[in-house]
Length: 102
Image (cartoon, rainbow, N blue to C red; front, side, top):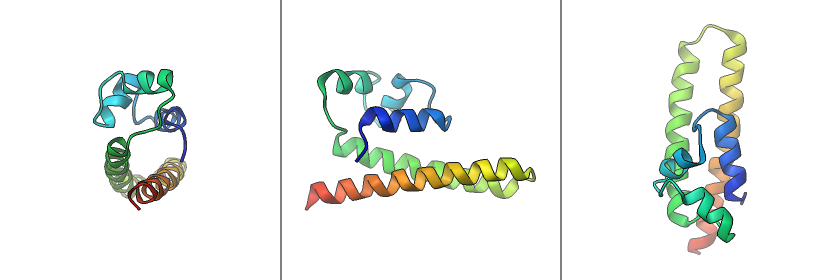
């Protein structure tokens, strides 16, 4: 599973969050979750992984809807690339969740 900082960078690059503080809230954690976890060398919590899966799923759904309504081929391709990246992240998160509960 990717480190929390790597997940943040991807989510940030995709334009889903604009800051580490927003990312913490997006994971249903405190605004300082990213910086605190990073400074203490902690891995992402299972609860945060579950929030990640839920939120990524919502973003995938809304991006699919936007893609259907879009007529610009280059923007549609951009949507599809983002969806692909999010599905990979979603699968990694589920794999980690299942690994932890076994």
